[in-house]
Image (cartoon, rainbow, N blue to C red; front, side, top):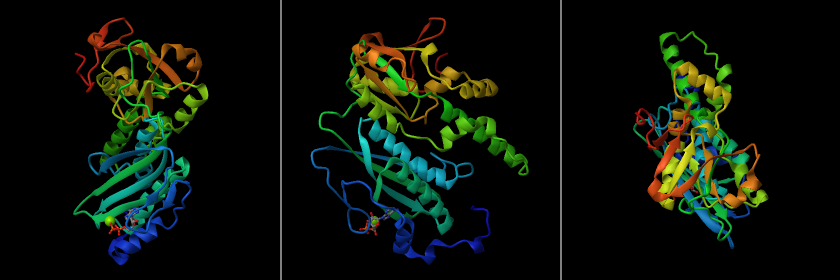
Length: 347
Ligand code: ADP
Ligand code: MG
C-alpha cells in the first residue's frame, strides 16, 4: 500500500485531527450494555453495576514490536487489540471496551490508517468489544500504538498470578511456538526479497505458523469453557513472552516451584517441521518463543477428571514447594532449571 504513488493517497493534513478521528471511527458500532457513551466527548462513560472492572494497557512501537515490511497494517490493528484482550481473559474476565491511542508520522496517508482501523474494527467485531475512545497525535517518525482494554469479571472470580499451590497441576491451552516460527519464516522471506524483489514467496506450507504470528487470537473460548467444566484456576497468566518466563512469573508470585515435563509440551506438527528446517530445538522455541497468546493456568488435582481429554487443554507439569525451584524435566529425565531467557542459557 505504501508503495503506491503518493499522488493517489490522501495526506493526513487534508482532514485535520478531528476530521481524521471522525473518519476512522464512524463505522464502529456500540454493542456492550456497559457502554453508556463512547467516542465524542471528553471521556467515555461506562456502567458496570455489580461487576469488577479490569483494565490493561499495552504499547506497540514500530521497529521494536512490529515491522511494517512484513506486517500488513490491517493485521497490526487486529493484533494490537487482540493482545490486550488476552490480558483480560488471563484474569478470567470478559473484555468489553478498548481505547486506541496512536502517534503517527505524515509518511502515513489516510489510506494506511484506514487499513489499521479496519483491523481494529474486525477485532472489535470478533470479540464483541466497543471502541470507546483514544488519542491521536503526530510523531516525527514511525508509528506508535497504545491500546487499553477494559473488561468485567464477577466479584470474587478474578484469577490472579499468585494463587498457585504446591501439587496444583499446570495446564496450557492450544499449542506453543507457532508465532515464533512464523516470525522466522517472515524474516527469512524479507531477506530473500531484499536480494531478489521478483521472488514471490510461497508461504502456503507455513500458513498456520505465519498466521499465528500475523493474526494471533486471544483464548476467548477458555474462560467460558472453564466455567462449563466447573473449574476455577488457582492462578492464570497469558503466554505473551514464552512458556518459561510465564511459569517463572506464576512461581514467583505464588511462591511455589514447578516441574515442567518436556514430553508434554504441546507442539503443532508444522512447528516441529519448521524447527527442523531452521535447525532450532522445538522445546526451546516453546519455552522462549513468545507471542502465542495461549493461557497458562494451575488447577487443583481434584479437578483433573473435569479437564481430562479436552483437546484444548494439556497438563504440562505440576507445582511444588518453592524451595525445589522451577525445572524442566527433559525427555531423558534430566532436570534443568528454567530460565526466563531461553536461548543458549541451558548450556
Ligand atoms: P481531547 O482533546 O479531550 O483529548 P480528542 O479530540 O483527543 O479529545 O478526542 C475526541 C474524541 O475522539 C474522544 O472521545 C476520544 O476518546 C476520541 N479519539 C481520539 N483519538 C482517537 C483514536 N485514535 N481512536 C479512537 N478514538 C479516538
Ligand atoms: Mg485527546
